[in-house]
Image (cartoon, helix red, strand yellow):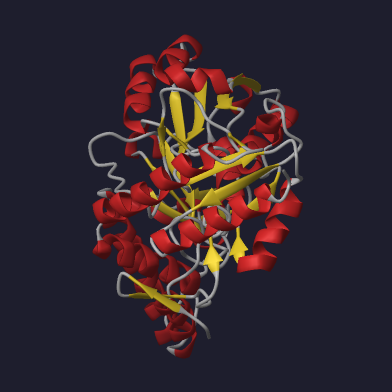
Length: 397
């Protein structure tokens, strides 16, 4: 297995590869890949009700990982629930909220399909109203939210960092607005997770959810939610079965009150272990150190990209940005440019519509490119990217 070492961590990246697509899927630490095989080599059972040793070990193991994750976010273990994907997670959340058909979902065109799709499904199935914030609303987001969110029936569905153009939102202030109005706040932290410290001890949305394979640097097939205690009891899980049920009669079942209330089927302990291992590693490095490192990379990237011909950064005035930048060009197709960069210098970036068609409708481009960094990227790598991109664009003049 080819790998590189950054900040004392061995990552699953080829030595000559410049991987700038962490917002699609993060590159895993080698120890997190090993954690998956270690789990199966050490028994590899599943957490269900039973008495034999391997089942007991699996149950204890799962609760240990639930506790580690809870400690990272300063919440109680009962608030943590595991899912196989962010999409199934959010669908479960929306369909588990009481009286969903009478609610109104407020979201943004800056969100991707994984967030907007489940909301549209709720609209199609139950007639749940959807209202959209647009790109211009991001400049004064709190003011726009105050104008939109005005009822206990409202559900605000946003990400802490937009995958489309890297806008970083002050989720704690947004949570205060929702608390004042009694509205429900659902927050996707998939793109902030692993890049900055996230603490939900004092201020928290009603439900936080995340993919485990993006900023968290875990494997695909992992996701989780953190549910505020007072909101937890009001939710009736969409899918039930397995360990979520304590007892069952012919026309009645009783659900557990633990974190596994939303967990059905066989939970993937090996992948959960891998995800938690990656987050532990990132936490040990220090999120402030990670932010400082990425801030330097992205300040350089934005400055240099602004000076290149034929491209335009997808930006919003007076906002803070995270480690994601997207840009478009009316001179060259995004896929073509991405292929050329990879052919020349093994530079990998995302191209296309980025699973965000509503965002694309507000842009003057048919497709765009996205550069997203993480802890493992270096200043030398982003310089090579800019030099290579500049060289390609200069050939067009």
